[in-house]
Length: 124
Image 1 (tube, rainbow, N blue to C red):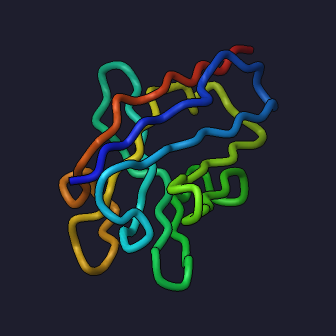
Image 2 (tube, helix red, strand yellow; image 1 turned 180 degrees about the vertical axis):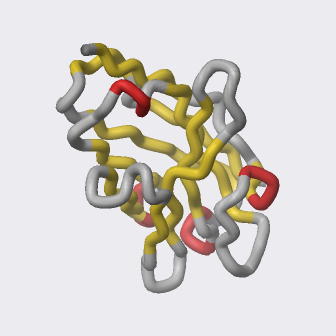
């Protein structure tokens, strides 16, 4: 079992940047495909980005492509989400999670070991 802890959220003005971190502990982190999701009030949890452990290939939701960058440091057991040009609609609680499938499937049901989340609020 792996435990995940997100950090780095906060209040930022539209157009600003934030970097989220997800620290993993427990089982060997470097062999897991990892993902970021977000959930706004009254909405379902939605996929944001994922990164594979082998090769580091990445996948993004269309809504964040070219603005967000997912990366990982296996030596530090940490995955990051660099967010730029933030928009009001990016406001949500952001979660990291471990992929449960051999191929990354961008749905919440395909991920597990969720962290507690970190709040990102974008103001105008």
